[in-house]
Amino acid sequence: MAEVRGFDESKVDDAGLNESIKKLTPEKIQRVVQRVFNKESAARLQVYLNTCVHCGLCAEACHTYVSRDHDPRFAPVSKVRDTIWELIKNKGKVEPEKIKDMARIAFTECGACRRCSMYCPFGIDIAYLILVMRRICNLLGVVPKYLQDTTNSHAATMNQMWVHQDEWIDTLQWQEEEAQFEMPNVRIPLDKEGADVMYSVIAPEPKILAQLLGNMAQIMTVAGIDWTMPATDGWDNSNMAMYSGDFEVMGRVEKLHWETAARLKVKKVVMGECGHAFRGAVYDGPRWLGWQYPPIPMVHAIEFYYDLLKSGRIKVKEKYKEHVTVQDPCNTVRGRGLGHKLRYVIDQLCENFTDIDPRFEHNYCCGAGGGTINCGPPWKPTRMRSTRVKAEQFERTGAGVIITPCHNCHSGIEDIVGHYGLGMHVKFINEIMVDVMEKPEDMG
Image 1 (spheres, rainbow, N blue to C red):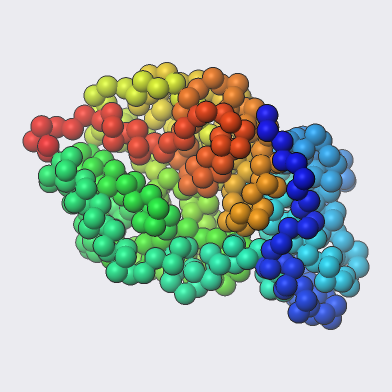
Image 2: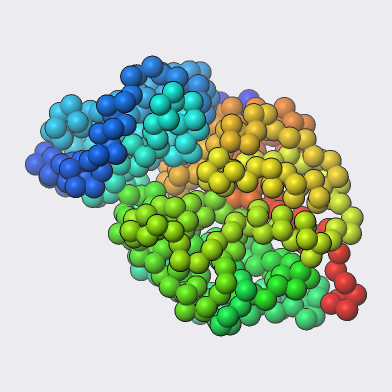
């Protein structure tokens, strides 16, 4: 297994941390810390911190800790000790250089995957404590520059990757034409009021993975779904502001998304193959907005595919023959319990499947979630150091293809495959389904 040599994480050149702390004063730090502790997170934070007995049982659950030869500095309890606890102990009176170290830990050494919480004897949501730290960093303006750029894009364009309105429409038209080479009657309906389904995606699809849109248009057509996509802002359901700690922008993104679905009067929203977007739309976003639930039902692509296959609306002509394994996305399998449905879908589509171990909610994080991959190239060596256990998991399966219905997992695992020389490929379900599904003659 490849090692990352000669890389000192404390010396990474990231202007979002190194330059930003030059503008801080101890007084400003203390003021922001007190605001977050006293006005935004007082009761929940206090209960968690008072409950923790520092037993360290969370350590073995963390892929960062395990991948780094059990270095105690990377145990979840240590990450909390060196950030939130440090601020509480000193009542927010810390120097700017200390905030830089805390930001590095909170943004690059924890993916907020919540595996550690399952092994905590008290069920403490350690990821929440790390997100509180990120909130403080955000209010201080100390955020890795690449992650901050995605938040800036959300704020300015309401999508993650600076996709302009005309580019969005052009991409959908382009993918509709591409799909029509396969099935002439394929359409991508825009702004259709009263449709059964609004299909929601994230910005990497129109930006760099446009073929996924054309694939879904074919799947919707074969399944006979009455669907639409928005023609206006509100189509992007990704939300990196949720992870950068800019909860105001997070709330704006989620509010516009749900207002768009309500304007179109759709019966439900199908979220594409993305884990964090589902979490933002169903859990974190509504909570920040003061809603108990989203105003319209949302299902993740895993559930949607499961229903299409179970009901017979999609039939398989010939199963995919490559040897495959799977990555369980944290936000939809650990967070939503979709592991069994995910495996049903894979069993229906694929001939040769080897499950991963550990699996389901116990599976390790890909190391890219929680905004870590969005911290950009300066921090890629950190991610690779923290994902050795993930590479070893994949290697043990002997598979040639890793299936994962999540964009962060997909990109992060491609990095792992390249870094550790695994010789494997990564695929979305959508790519396999469109190849193996039966396409009636009257549609082709």
